[in-house]
Amino acid sequence: MTQNTPWITLALTTLLLATVACSEEDAGEGTLTAVVYGEEFIEDGITAEDMADNWEVTFSSFVVDIQDVTVGSVALPSSEPIDISVGTDGNGHELSSTTASAQAYTDASYVIAQMKVTGTATKDGVTKTFDWEFDHDTHYSDCHIDTTLTEGGTEVFQVTVHADHLFYDSLVAEEPQVVFQALADADLDEDGEITRAELEMTDIGSYDPGSAGDVSTMWEWLVAQSSTVGHGNGEGHFGAHSH
Amino acid sequence: MKTKPMHLVMCSALVICTLLSCDSPSEAVRVELPLVVDASRIVPVTNDLGYEVTLTSVRIALKDPVFTIAGEVHTASPGQRILDLLVPNVYAHPGHYQGGEVTGELSGEFVIDWIEDEGQSLGTATLIAGEYTAANFTFIQGGDETVVAGHTAILEGSATKDGTTTTFTITLDSPEGRQLVGAPFTEEIKEDSTGSLHFIFSPLDELEGDTLFDSIDFESLDEDDDHMLSIEPDQEEVEDAYNVLRRKFQTHDHYTIQHID
Image (tube, rainbow over all chains, first blue to last red; front, side):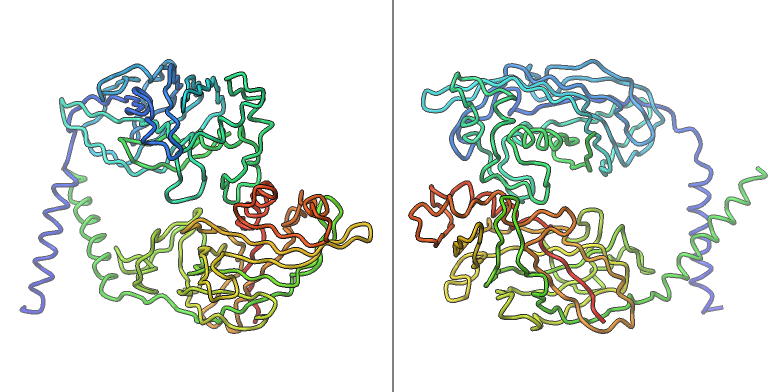
């Protein structure tokens, strides 16, 4: 009897837990909302202090087309492209909303179908403008984000866009530098505008692409970095692939 | 009412089975194999500009080679990662690398004189038996007193084209903590595997056919025509060549791990 006591206790506990788990029924619904937020870097700009080479970058427009947002098994309605350079006081721009079963969701995914980035960079009285469009789909998935929806409550999943990644000098470093000089130098005709054509003619120089053998021009560099800007709820990291 | 008892039985059975399996955790099988310097693929190569390039010295500083398998590995002991079973070390990035998981390692810093050290063991690597896919390591800058003289790598050799030979010394510095990920290591390591792991450096990317020296025009870079060329960090006149060489040197295309019984 004494030997069996732990097993009996265990079995009873198990039965109790199983009863609770197995008899759970409809827990009601809540509201799930997806927003996109470009943080201060996109809404206010990247200051010279935030850049390793003291360029200052501001975005006059930063349009993202975000599709196929899912939180757990819940697919949110599609939304229109949105300019996330417009200030939101930290709240982000709402993409869409839906009602869903009140429960815990443990992952999320989305697609950035297009990104159009327009702005200026300034240093020591020199100004460079840029107007770049990245029109490849980047799928962000495999992210463990806990979203617990309660009955009658509202939970927000935030697609967070990190603009500083566009100015990283490495695709593989733990702590890449945020720089602009190499992009400024790609203004080959020195007319003040850094065009895609010029970037396609400019080698990546000292930038480190790791083993990505298909990244050798500054345009290819920006395309590669543009596929790394997506995050979730601030700093949540996703697996990403583009096509 | 009719289904609940069946759920209870199933839930109870599941939990009890899980607990019983916890009662007898199985240890992952560890295999120890020496990691040996292999210079067999340091052979003359012809770059895309027609130079036949022969390396006479390859010296590289690196640390902490690790070995990865595809996917995740699970043990019978819930909550315990297989790397913890292997070695309870702290890694900057434990676990997943390019879809794989670290299940083998040889800790330590190494300054390898690849040709001079041919056949020498760097130490004994410990691996969990399994299907391996890749190896990673971190470039370092060796001490001033070492054969890399405070740098990451020094490559010496000659490049010959149209009867003219230029000897060269290439000095490379990798950023601190620069990890090389995904060097091919497609081998099954069994619990009774013997032999050694060969750490191979090759100036030829055997998969794509290009070389470490592609786009390097040795004669043009030799501005004083003395047939001796030095490419080093922070030399403006050879900056582009330096960047290209360092970029290629830091890819996984030129490193391989091979198990030889």
